[in-house]
Image (cartoon, rainbow, N blue to C red):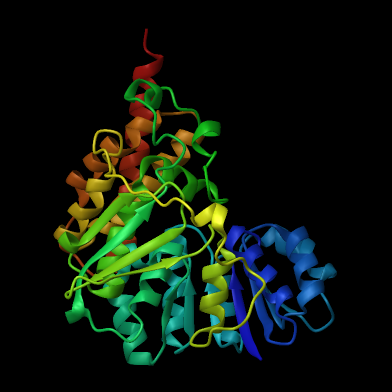
Length: 389
């Protein structure tokens, strides 16, 4: 039986991970659960899965949770609760579904223990991909990418060497505004941006799909995790979200990984890696697979994509700057403080002002903090300008 740590158990990835556990009785167990403040949901999860440890970073929420836990369950609370959990629990794989740059220290903690990391927190690779890959190598751990696109590449590259790869082809649904004209994009609302046409995801990733910033970050992830040069990473609009990504080899062969748009698929693969365990998840279905189309990305509709290539070429802490700015700008858009079309240009401006050659986890966290501050200043400036008669 494989033992799991589920970081971000109240979020989309965490809940779907626990669905996979339910569907595989006797094959997967839960050693620990972590969330930020959802104490009622965490109480229900703890009662069902009986983990040895749970963690809540919100101390008040932890106080409410404590009397509801099963006898013998250890509770960590406060800002360091997730790291305490990562270091105390006995587990084989940590599923990392915490959103944002705040998840980077947990990625480091898991890999430092030599544990496999099923990583949905893309910010970890964007901020400090080179460092995490090297840490995994030296500690004998494996980074298992949960993002459907990176998981597809991981599967296509199984048993292959980078020298045999000509290009990697990332697919993107194009989000809810893939057919919108620029005037419509100017008036896009948070509710409209959150209506993803094929996937069910959290707010940050859904908005990233609407701007294609998520693909900009994935370009960086592919570059760091697989060692592919940015000029060999190509992005295509694929409306059906059935082909999750492709790898093109030097002999002209193209290998694709296909499946319905269901995050439980890549999660199941990562949880049972290196095996392929049976599941009840859907495979080939004629209605889904009958027509598969590809289109080029319109750079005028999706200017954010170019920022990922820019960061991959710059190196240093540029990925941390881009991600930090985008996190704050997405929050600003969801709060009605700026337009969707302002996210990419403001992020580009922050990148130009703050990115430096500095490398390493500490430098990435500093860059993230500074980029957030710059982005907040820009949002305040835009708000003041909009309110001035």
